[in-house]
Each structure stands twice: as C-alpha cells, then as structure tokens.
Length: 161
Picture (cartoon, rainbow, N blue to C red):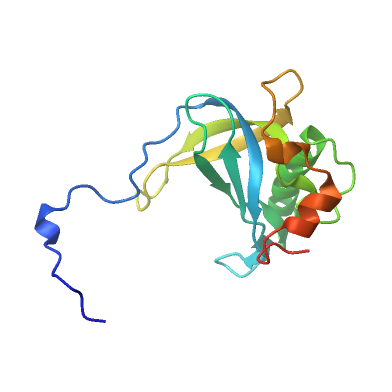
C-alpha cells in the first residue's frame, strides 16, 4: 500500500508502546479479555492469555497481560500456572471454572511486579504475581455488577465459550 506521505523515522522518538511500567504494588483489576489457549514456544504445553484492566486509582484503564500455563508436560510448570489460576478464581469467588466468561469484569486485587528478562532480550514488563479478594476495596465498575449469564451473552466472539 502506498502511503499518502512518507514517514521520516529519524524524527520519531522512543521505542513505541508509550506506557511506562506500573509501580510494583496491589491494584484493583478486572479481567477484560481471555483469549484461546495458545501453545507454548517449546510446544510442551498451553497457556491461557488473560488481559486485566486496572479499575481504580491513578492507573485506571491500564492493561496487564499474563499467560499462565494451563497444561504442560512438566508437572511443576503446570502446577505453577494452575495455582495462579486457582488464586484468581478463589479471589473472584469461583470454586469451579467452566468458562473464562465467569471471570469477566469480576474485581480482584492483583499483586503487580516488574519482570526483568534474564537474557536481556526483552524490555521489562509488568506481571501479576498473585491475586486476592477485592472485598473491602473500592466499589467495582459497572461491568462487575452484571450477572455471569448476562456477561457470557454479551461477551465478544473472540472469547472462548
């Protein structure tokens, strides 16, 4: 496709993205998006890409992606990923997860850290290390008050049902 006008990248600053990292700490977050299971880079397991949105405080609207391991040939890796998913479900008050739609919009507290790439290839990233109940936190956003069945009915088509 031919551009209407050329872009002179020598005048463009930065690496892109445009967002600085969130400071480590606890944030009130809600699941905004859950994607289909994806295969790990080494092909030995699957991850569940989840996108959380900060729903209270100075960083409202910021997004944090995590990809907990859902299944893996190595039991320890699978146990680690599933323990994070269990924490999330427990914090959301869900005992049996049948569909990721059950988690959409439910406020929980995410303990955010800054993850550094051990090999120096990737830039630092925010990750959610753990989840806890949002009981006693600020009032949840309107989407959190929607019943699970209504959330599932109005969920975008890219969310696995």
